Length: 180
Length: 355
Image 1: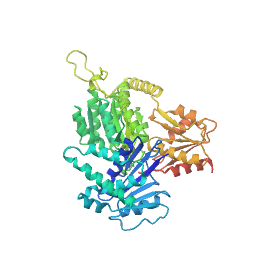
Image 2: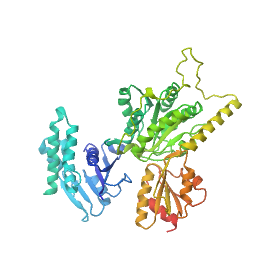
Image 3: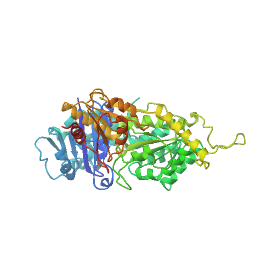
Image 4: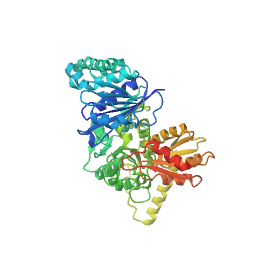
């Protein structure tokens, strides 16, 4: 039985919500059950934002994630806030570009992704979140890159079609951080 | 049919349009502003009317007017805004006008907070306006149910000529889940005729009158008795509920909306500790499924009934009526936008069991 409880957290504007919705859409396309729950309110406006995503091959009971099996920390306040909550044996993906410290726990797996450097090299800062997503997919191995790319092809059409390849490369560069 | 990922608020708006609703009047308020936002874009495309009113009071009175003219119509708001609509809701009940009112609840009282809560249960089920009236109140717990019930809400409103409320907590409004559109869209042209509506006599019939004023006490009493008879038919025919693992359970959690999901998670925790727990979830909170709850509670296996709410304890009154003293009823809840955790809920059950 697969039951993934994920928190994606960071500053507003880092693409935190869209990492979550892309995960949820991908999982749904693969026939899994999903729920996506955003934090909402004043903290979204320039402060920290997070979303709870649950992905399972069984019925999803509660959409609220208190003890994530996986955490994607896009900034330091998010790592500080949610690191203690991660389940033992869980996974923490750290946006190495702006988080200045390492994961302190030794009972979780930590992976560091220099998302801004990757995005900068690719010439488009907006794909930083895709690098994080690529690392997540590679580290957890239940969502497939093919499904994500299929979805990107549906989103980016016409004049924006060239963005498919850019996002695909960002996903793979993120995945490389897991393989290294 | 492929599943689609929908946000609760947007799904409720789309479900209304698919149910043949062609008039939306409302005023934005967190956490339901995606409903008017979605309506502002899609209602005109469907050939309907979207109007952002100057206030919630104006919106409910526009609903009154459009409904009187025979339109399938709705409004939506969140707790403080729904308070403002209460007078109009009472008038709609008095004038026997159908319509759907969505309340995506947030913490109160007063302006409270924008985070999810369930403090409007009394207002929804007992009536926040004046007079002897009732609303059918649906309390969905997931987005598929939101979508399925929305069409039913409009149908029942027309059938009984009374307002129907969709009572959601902010969590259901804000979250996204996969849904299927199970029923084909309804065209407003295919809806049953409303011979009572004020559509203009064209000198071919006597004028219809939409009114809640019955100045003669005898006439007002007759009117109230007739409404009461209608509400009795609703009680007989429209109770909805769901049970999960209640057969042979030691602990029965009772909860609606998001807390019902937390209660199921709590039941899972108790099961790991060797205690069988089930969840009774009213889907209509008026009419309340008292007898069904009683049947569950009266089982020999049941030791305690634990009510879970995102309030300081409102539905627990209905639970006590349903259980009617056959088993002890206890309560666990948090208010003001704080959500009880499954562990807290499980612990409340352990405490009730004396462990």
